Amino acid sequence: MATIWTAGTESLQKSSASRNLTLAGNHLGCATYSGLLVSCLASWFIYKLCYLVVFPPYLAHYHAV
Image 1 (cartoon, helix red, strand yellow):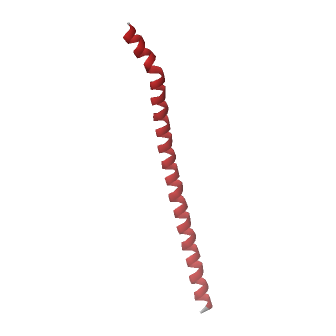
Image 2: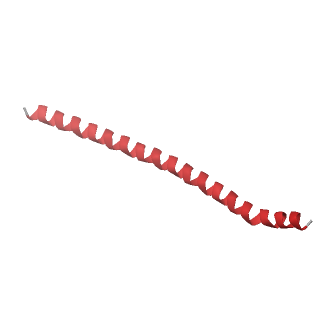
């Protein structure tokens, strides 16, 4: 009886560890995806900011001419 209990407990611990590893993998994957998304949004925002800073002088020059 004790050996069956021990084997069952070991199996449960292994499946729990496996599940935790899977969850950690999912979180890591999600973090990578969200990091990529944030990076993409940041680069888009910087591009728009540069466009707003650089474009008006050209526009003003065009209207002046």
